[in-house]
Length: 383
Ligand SMILES: *Cc1c(COP(=O)(O)O)cnc(C)c1O
Image (cartoon, rainbow, N blue to C red):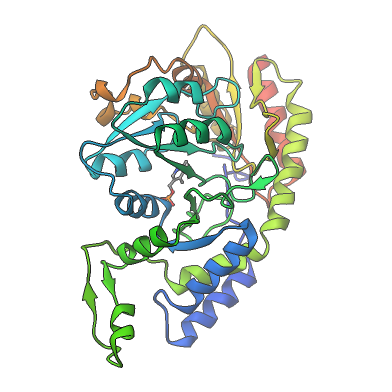
């Protein structure tokens, strides 16, 4: 492996994160507390959310949300197969049935017409994944969900600062789940945030986030702050103040980080147009800001399915990392045999899943790194 290895992504951390963490370590309070609450408040301000609930990961947040909505055995939840398996797993572990929807071939977003074909009286929710930071088309999905009286949930793991028709993801009234794991646009190591409008649903998620134990009820009853009660068994999914301290520092530089992503992508788009057999994600007109969590390309050689993996190996030999986002969930061993989850051929998911590749993109990357990636692609493909 060459010494000048260019990874797929790297977090942007500096003395700001370090000093915020040190403050928490010195304070004597390191579990979830005042800093996690401040992180929630600043997040509300940044995305324009009604309220925000910090959690230990997006996966955990989605689990709490599903349980808070009483989604369990007998319920179906529609989700694209073209996604990371974590939310699909949570649906499965709660005893509900994930039902896969197809994507649109050139934007890679969930296809509302596919959703309307797989919906049944058992459907309780639709999960819209904002793939790569481009958003799903929310209006037609909202229409389907309000007609069917089911929940629309946004998987916003890639979509902090994404805008749909001029409004930020996270500012709508339906729940959206964000991720701060180490690869995401801002990170807390592991972590996540749920934005939503309904105050009762929010209270229920907060309860389930900490074992279902309600201390406030006892505070309200009298002066016995040490007592507690349990309303319903919950999980243990809080974000610690140590993690939230990293998040606060990250949130404060988010807009700078985002500008760097946008600058690098504009260079990628200009340079990559000359590379044969490569196409890029089409940007739908309803997207007013793309968060560019990933920079995906499609490698189009039709005769050989292994070409994408070959291209990936060749890039790696030349010191360039890349990623596969995503292998369709229905093609993974556990889900392969579950045919009832697949009511549609998922033709676009299969097509894209075999050809897509994410190129390196992170804020501290240099313009010369972008040129190196494109030149390397060019020389591999033309040889
Ligand atoms: C990262 C990711 C998740 C899970 O986020 P965690 O915080 O790691 O649990 C879910 N969905 C998508 C699309 C993701 O990229």
